[in-house]
Length: 280
Image (tube, rainbow, N blue to C red):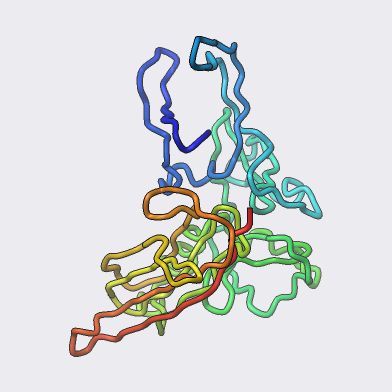
């Protein structure tokens, strides 16, 4: 799909269902971001345009950011809540096992427990194993295999930051321990990236948060966040576009967070800047 066109979904009766243009940040589409599709149908041509009379659309095995895995994710995963679900290996941005039931992608986390992976050596490989609880935070974990010291940690990994936070923070019975102790801005992941990357940051208290992208000349490229947010562990994705929605060129960029309420007598002011690389 190109950025100039408008796309929408309709059912088999031709009734409008939903717009799908520029919906990368809608939660319901998170599992499909950066995935390609295979379209079947006859090509229809006219004087100035060309279209496809679509008869079927299916998620393709190809994607924008494929990775190489040492093992088929479906061989080291299981769906205990839906034993009849079909497993399809997904190599887009990581090594994932996607489960389908009656053709629908389902959430098949077999465990809601939070396992502390701090200090566990999964090997010096660059393969993304998933998201885990490390050093009192949810973070991406890389390694060579999900098995370390003869222990299979497959069920200790989560498919999304939200799942990890729900299991490791929200499920806690002590609400105070859920909150970060200090402001912090983590390194974006992946880095280098093309074109999607995720910024994670910690808010120990309610604060006005501003996250801004700059080029190396100090010119503002995009403002990702500019609002008051409640305390907690937060993250936001960026698709390498400026404030006008136009793709930016490859290169080195800076991202800065400003948080706090310096005008308040008890408020704190926090500012931190990190570098990232966009490759194309």
